[in-house]
Length: 472
Ligand SMILES: Cc1cc2nc3c(=O)[nH]c(=O)nc-3n(C[C@H](O)[C@H](O)[C@H](O)COP(=O)(O)OP(=O)(O)OC[C@H]3O[C@@H](n4cnc5c(N)ncnc54)[C@H](O)[C@@H]3O)c2cc1C
Image (spheres, rainbow, N blue to C red):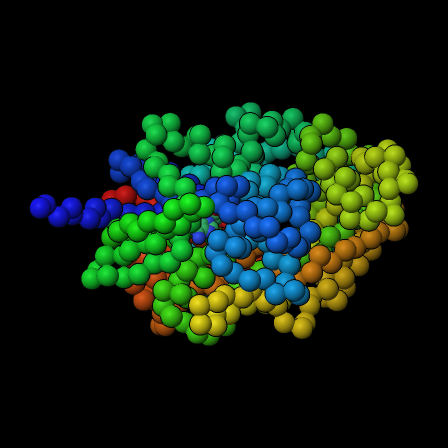
């Protein structure tokens, strides 16, 4: 009888968020096809037990099941004091739209050499040009990509203010636009948003991407070949490959790799603690969009302990969530809606040194937890400074409200498998895992975003760099 030879794939990508798809876009410049393992969390599992997710962003209302299935299939228990969200929609966290990207890159990591970092920056500019992303990009304060968008004049004026402490700037927006110049509310938010679903259509015209609706349960090394144990609602199967590209987001990637490396220590997952703020604008900001993007970022000028806050005009999605979050506002719902165009929402983010999330392994059980301290005090201090500044510049009225959503409810998870020279849970400049050079990591796990607060640009650019490297 003939024994069936097992098929060994050359390369398999795990995850289908923007890090995966950007890796694939450059990888397929020279390669014929690629296999992607990524579950549709809508249909993977349905647990009867009610899962209490932390506050969801307003566009994701009612999608708790996705988060429940993400944590259940990745077999990660969330401790009570931890409000982390793993994933929000099948195909990646970034199905959230209204994304903003920093308009500059800062290399916070000594181990990430200057030359490599320059290459990452170059990839980012190519990405901006290829997909005609909206916004301007600066390198050492020099403008190197321009696709400007206009915002209301009274906000634009903030950019010109010379202040010793604060700096206002426009972010890059997670939207595509062929027009050279656009007023922010002319963005086509249905078709032109930078989210995996729409991005996939742009890059897979020749159907070269083969999806497998499974999640990776574990990986095992077997004589130089890597075995992937895959599961979904009804099935389980094992596939074999020579190289793996991890793009499953920091929490899932770290979990699978600490299991593979049998690491027992508690691993810190870095993040940006977040405070929501609500301000009242002196002037209306009218917009036709369902979900308005951030029009401005304010940062403190120091590179050390940099915080960043955005300025996002009110919109229907956010005001609905506001009323849901604070039910006592219900009787004045009509007033909230009436003044929607006077509301300014803000997300204040602290740098990663305030991180307080840990992934712990005990025998085969994984727990995501946070420790006693929370960052709310620091966040509120910084928020007050921004509030006072905006009042002094007559942008807002002198009352505001803040809300701390809890430890980990900040959506940016990263920094658990950093660039370094020694150890096992780290990567070299080519993003190869130090413990196994056939395992590459292209999601946020490899970066520590201290100065940069909106990580997606760096993540995308780095994934594109590695895609190009492996396509040779
Ligand atoms: C509400 C929200 C707002 C955000 N806003 C911004 C912003 O404005 N700017 C910014 O820069 N960043 C923002 N982020 C963060 C940004 O979305 C992430 O940086 C980005 O999604 C990272 O992309 P990724 O591809 O690395 O990971 P993800 O988008 O997390 O994709 C992970 C992929 O892996 C898959 N996966 C998970 N587990 C497994 C498994 N076991 N096996 C196989 N596949 C698996 C998932 O289904 C998904 O396809 C935001 C995030 C959220 C949630």
